[in-house]
Structure formats: C-alpha cells, structure tokens
Amino acid sequence: MRPSKLDRILAAEPTLQPVLAKAQELRAFAGLLEGFLPPDLARQTRVVNYRDAELVLMAASPAAAAKLRLLAPSLVNFFLKQRLQVNSVSLRVQPNTPHGAHAAPQKSANFSTLTLDRLRKLYTSMAASPARDALGALLQKRLPRK
Image (cartoon, rainbow, N blue to C red; front, side, top):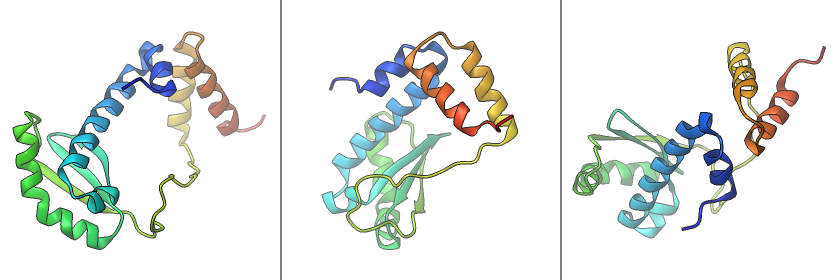
C-alpha cells in the first residue's frame, strides 16, 4: 500500500517520527482486527490505542461492546499467535454515534498553556516543511491575540 500524503509529510520531519510510528502500529492492529471480527462488528469497532500490552478498542454501541467483551479472550489469543504482545483488551463505548456514519465529526479542542508552549517549541525546532506549516497554522488559530 502506498503511503498517504500525511504519512509522507510526517516521514519527512524527524521530530514527528514517534507520531508516524504510533499511527502505523495502530493501523496494523486495525487491519488484523478487521480480519478477525465479523464484518458487521468490525465496522462498529475502532482501535484507539495500544500501550503496555493492552489494546484499547472503541465500540460504536453498548451491544457491540458486549460482543467484543465476549470475544476479548479469543482476540488476545489471536494477537499472541501473530506474535504481538497483547495481554488484555480494554473496551470503551462511543455514545451517540450516528448509525452508518463513516467520517469522523469535526471536533474542537482547547489546549492548555503548557501544551501550547510545547507545540510552539516543537514548531521552532522543526525544519521548513509542510508539517511545520500546518503546525504554524494551528498555533496561529489557537494562540491568544495580542
């Protein structure tokens, strides 16, 4: 599969390598999960995170979460057979997700002062690139007007 434009932008910026690695890791888990689950359940499930041998999944409804909870031990065994260190599966439910919605809704975020300071430092440390430009545009929108 050809890398997406975002992947190419991230790959060009050394300071963003951890973000790219995490995205690729989650994408690999999602692909395996899609192959393991029945199609209807796979469409209602998203890989949210992987940390400390725990795979975190988001279910679109309580019913989907219940099915995933029953499948969790089999899922752990499946990932272990794939030689991936997964000891547990954690489930979360995304409430009020419209049925059949495929695109993520636009969300707004408020950054803390500490986060804005860190993003500003990251921006100044980056070489000229599309990723730096995008971060600059984000900071310009989020920083208080003087």
